[in-house]
Amino acid sequence: MSSIARWSYKNTATVKPYLGEDLENGGTLYGDPFEIACTWAAESKQMRDATGAEFVSNYVIWSEDARPKYRDMILLNTEQLTEWQEIRSHMQWDMAMFSDTPDYRTVT
Image (cartoon, rainbow, N blue to C red; front, top):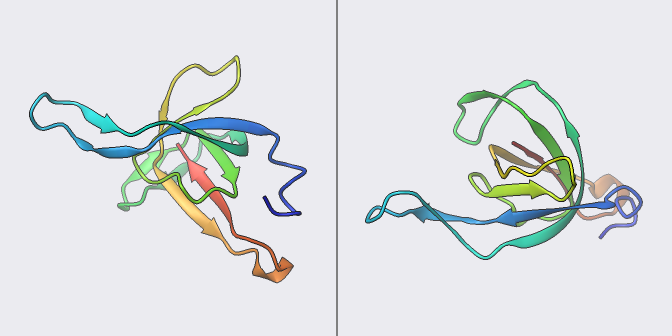
């Protein structure tokens, strides 16, 4: 974790990576869950996803972890939130001006 982000990413979230569609049985296939350090905010805002489709966001999650991707499922590790959310956007933010690793904004 970068020195800039270390103070802010005190929460965690669990991510289930999207593997594809199960054409035989219907449904969606996900890989083994992993945990990321993050911080988040509830934010309802009109946005575009990775395919350009418009949607209204539920949560914006900031992290230094590049692993979450479009269509993965994410669960914020907090007592108030118990539902998995589909990741609709995962964007990289350049931190080179601080000689640091990139940050990511993930939106559900």
